Image (cartoon, rainbow, N blue to C red; front, side, top):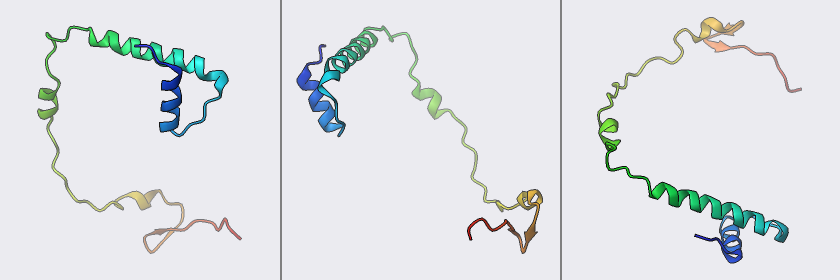
Length: 92
């Protein structure tokens, strides 16, 4: 598939980006190369590849357990008071 100048302008309008007229040809070529590559991917025979969905459904999910998020965290505080971090004042 070949990308036209109008295609580049339309995509840039939809993406809300400004493209200089001097770069349209460069972007046109880049987009055409990307679409050619995607077309090549469509030609790959995947009939012998197992569906990935079976692996996704077989994942073991852990059970959610509510824990106190502060457990042990205050041990790292150089200065603490009333289960809160004490930090130096940085704004006058």
